[in-house]
Length: 619
Image: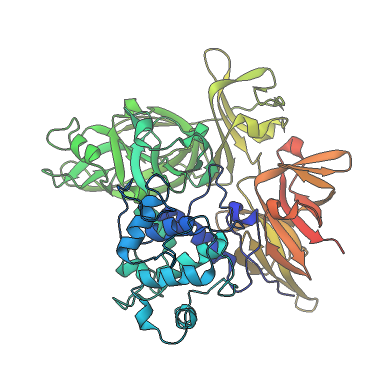
């Protein structure tokens, strides 16, 4: 049987309520991100959106003005209403909203900022953002306004009567729907015609483009004053480093950082390119550079200055480019300012065409290496071939690139506090890389390995510093964090004894992303949680996870009888109802009323974790 899926909300939203069935949860996740990026609705100091909380008139007006093209000052010189004195936190928003004609008070001359707002009151204000006035509607108030509310699809995801109190969730949907509603004034969607942001070809909010447009930065970790340039305390921020969610503790020298204050989020890019500076174009006002045979656009004035006539680099110099979004150049350094020697895994090795300084073409290999520091380095290498998946040490100085293959095995148990491997302590700046196949690689930290028993075949390389501490460690598929997990929702296996043919079709969901495996191979996989290991396009392993019946969950620990199991940070949680899987969260299913089943990939002493949790309601 094919299963249906309800995609995930943001964690903060999931902690409070499921979505109305009229709106796909992916839209709610987009809504949360988009409204935070536009500073319309943001979480509290803990990141919670408090979606079940009612909305006051003052709170709604603040959201309204954030969604409007009207600027609001930090303070007001007058009291807009007797019950909104100039010292009231909402006074500047109320004053600006009244001046713009978006809101009015009550007949008794008050505004009542602490009163909860009804749906019809919120709808009238939003319609005024779209250019509608009371004179545009006939009949008794607010029948005409509510009819327009439905006509413009402002009601998507909202199931309130016109006099019902709005929650923050209702306000989130209303403002998100506003963005794609047509403005009466322009006839075009509000987001593009009034706020100036792009939509997709089918008229939907382009979430990725909006996040890119509203990011601030970049700064480079370690440059003078970089911390002060980020205008909030990011020690508790969400940090997305090279595509993985982590914390500010993971920031390292020369990381490229962008941020959103309203989203309390940092985006960190780690890619670098080292080689000879072959071209600068145009020379008078650099917009791009060519290094290792590839051209890169310049993003920052600092990078442009560095390669200009006034800067410190000239064509022919050895350089390292720090790359940010879209692989644009954020900073230009000498290789000595980064690391002249790196070790890691070759993730691609392919011939490319290059031009020498005289304009003559030649072909040489280009190596891309994922280093133990989590950064990607690209080198031109013309001294022989090198296979993807090789563990190497690369020493570079401009055109001179030396590559040496590495191999050094080690075994032992990592201490429970993650400070030692066997008899060797981890250095304070230890760099650890977990690898799989020819291109799978991921930087991990000692705490992730706590208690793991590493055998000789699990360690591909290690390096000791002058104090005898492990400073570099490259592993072979220890954590399992490089693989795909989810639930198989439909299995079809066929065989023909006469023709000696077999075939299998497996439909699955991996965190809201649907997939299918079809071919002549039968994997003997049942419906339910699975593990999928790929080496490039090839499937190495496709199997069901191991089940453990849980009693309770506390934080990231699943308790089962007298044993406990650690739940992976990115574990998938599904609610199983009538044979259908609905993507959920631990916050939703650990408050009682559910039986919980954990599914793990391997024992924790080997690096395993609970990867999938299934929740079923009692009875």
